[in-house]
Image (cartoon, rainbow, N blue to C red):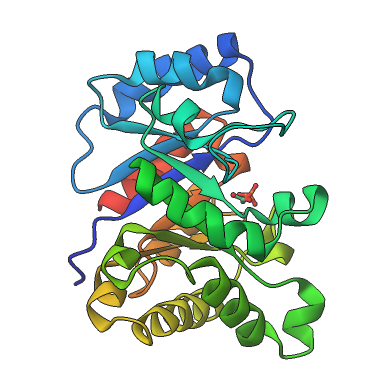
Length: 253
Ligand code: 13P
């Protein structure tokens, strides 16, 4: 049994107005009031961050942003900086989600700056990695993960590596209803940990690796029981308080 505390984080993507987010959190809090031995996170859109910090204050629920720019300030229309996020008293930030990589041109080069920037600011980065269907079919899964992780962590000092959370999200499983098999999830998450071990064995043992991609109440327990899966980054199933709470419960069991 690993000593890593599981993290279940709900990535809402571009869903929920402030009013809808408030409705969600009032529905969720009674379910997770007594949650023990599991960290719980929600990743609302930037407009609802402040409201969720206020509403979740004093509870077990942490609030994460979905993106952050690497610069301190400047002419970057539409972007938010680390200081703008820490001012809201949020706990962390998702970085390098495949949707940002595919649809908004997020690069490994930018992520190499974003991850240490988040750490420096006191934000817990959740660095997302994962292969596309064609890459898996070609046998390139490990090559893709190696590249994304080496680049994303290149400027993180060895003694901060364990403070990064890595989310393995196979692109073909995101929003498709297709979930990686337990064997596929375990193999990839163990590989991610082995890559970190090439930098620091100690960090690799402490670092949390999450699985993401169509995680639902009915498949969560099986995935979360895998030795190298330390939680989940949940999309669709995190939008409903009862289904999200059921996944949190599966992690705590
Ligand atoms: P789904 O759970 O909707 O497949 O999304 C996963 C995801 O992208 C979480 O970041």
